[in-house]
Amino acid sequence: MRRPSLLSAACAIALTGAVLNPAGAARADDVVTIVIKDHRFEPAEVKIPANKRVTLLVDNQDATSEEFESNEMKVEKIVGGRKQIKVMVGPLKPGRYPFFGEFHEATAQGAVIAE
Amino acid sequence: MLASLIIVFREVLEAGLIVGIVLAATQGVVGRARWIALGIGGGIVGSCVVAAFADAISALFADTGQELFNAGVLLIAVVMLAWHNAWMAQHGRELARDMKAVGHAVRSGEKSLAALAIVIGVAVLREGSEVVLFLTGILASEEGGITTVAAGGLGGMALGALVSVLLYAGLVQIPTRHLFSTTTWLLTLLAAGMAATAVNFLAQAGILMAGGTILWDSSGILRDNSMIGQALHVLVGYTDRPTEAQLIAYVAVVAGILLLTRWAARNSSRMVSPAR
Image 1 (cartoon, each protein chain N blue to C red):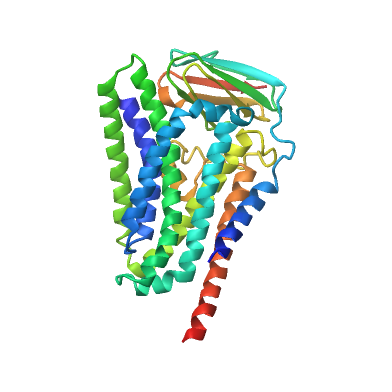
Image 2: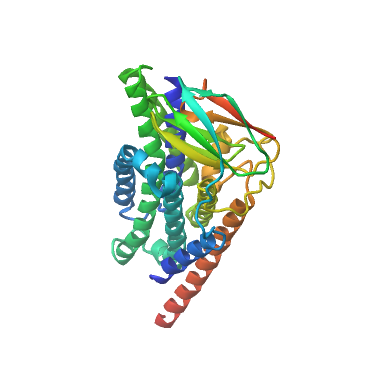
């Protein structure tokens, strides 16, 4: 009865292990800062180089937490009140990639422009 | 208030749909209420702990703690679901036979129920910690205070629970014979969707570097964050812009669980036949 659990665990490990980057997270050289203030992004639009991995530094200066989310960039990360997070995006094809703060979607809207 | 209602509703819906499927999958199994309640209760307590240490978790592993935590929690659920399905393939027949009788089946059924309780626990933990962070944020700010939090939070929870109950009520309409295979499929696709989401968190953390290409964009037809899109995301892992790695993980988990259950079912017939 233990066998299925071991086998499935092995499957899960093999599945993730096969394509993992052994060197760990790549520390991208480009860092772009986006500030959250009064539930708005500043700047609301940031330009990043296309076809390159970029680190977005989301600096939440509000007291409340926020969830930095983008369907287009496939990113979803909580940033606590008065905290910062780093999110790795890309390499992105040239284009406009909207993002939003899920906890304050009415005002927290922005976009990354890759070019 | 509407904003907090929608946020809480979305999070409760995600965890609630999983509870609904598990409830349907364990239809008639004695002792399930206790395990499922344990999963929900543990998940809620865990949510508060995770929310309290959110910043510390986030700062782990060179600021990728949050992604790794999410990916880890999802992968635990995937393994538990795979294990449950294999277990059901091995014991489903005897369990169905002895379903109403308290005895051997109940004792052995607990192992599988424990796996499902963990699945529910981690689902509630993941979504619940976001609810706690969001609501405590509102409480701490000048935006509304306790009335807003209570009204929005409770309303969202009630709505999320209602949709989950509707799903459960719909599922149990299925005749028992087909209910097992239906819920087995639902749990398999649920696991595959979780694996695809976990892969995405690994990519976001910069650990998984390969397979980041987006394969297609069906957001014009059905968006991820629409009501139906989100429900389908939880139930079958729908995403409007899947990456290569996500598709590979999805297909691999479906294939893996199918092979595992087939293997377990064969083992069960070998075990049963000499006794007869």
